[in-house]
Length: 385
Image 1: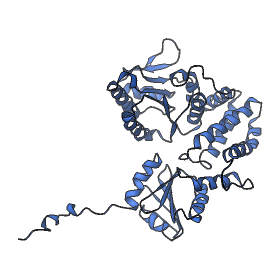
Image 2: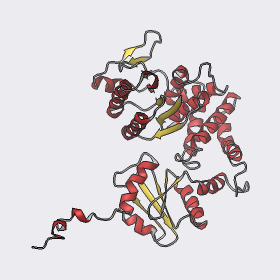
Image 3: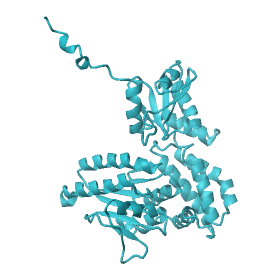
Image 4: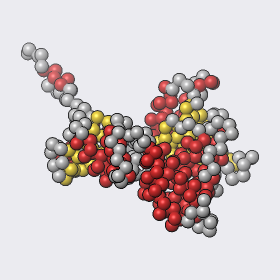
């Protein structure tokens, strides 16, 4: 069964996606930076699932349930009731926020303790394929492992270092300062934030594999007894080793360059990273500003485009060009800068995906031609008096 995961954009969210990918084949992961972005993300998934002929599993982890998410649960259950019994989708929601219980009650749902598992709270949506589970005592990373029977093949256990990763993430996420692995969790968190944006962007197909490999490699070091300081010193080597494996056979790779320089060459050739707009501008999503500078230069140097724009989750746009049009693009988004390097702001203030960024940028940068029939004078065109 196809498995798609929606998870939070922090260490616990990525810990949960690392666990899931270690136990089952995950087709796609969507990372949500802000809980307020959950609504449009799940709406996109619901539209897709309505059309999917075969049953799928949607796994939601560490998202802090708010009104849009709870409304989605109800619509998901209603959709399932209209599908054939053998084609019904499964929804697994694993959360640990106390505020989620408050929100569920406000929306007319009454969470109840699981009689077989102390501390676990369930919410009944009237659908046996919908599991909304909350456990305040454990992080989402641990819940994803403990509840693996809901989405993974029977008997899946994952690599040995998964246990260390789970323990360290839980100590950090629940701020268990007395735990002996708390400093290891802090070190993992620092490595995560140093790596999640600047290297392989969230919109690239290799993003999740890169982060999962890095977290598991770091956990392996902790399991072998590395201190937080030792892990920090080894982090660069861990990243470099993962990139070495990633870029085997990659054309144009130069091991003499830094990790970011090498990845920039790979990213500049990526088809999946960019969406061509109608005027030939290439749009990317979620690239770190330093990486975007390198990647955009390589893209234009090879002749793929004369103008490139990168959109951040926070809604900022960065234009680069080689023909003086970057500033023109930025001006359309209330921005400014230099002729070949300028920036602006999305009209909606933020973007949650590449598709969302394209939907906001295209009509502003390349507005459709006016419809003559909409003119108040159109009715007079063939009038002969």
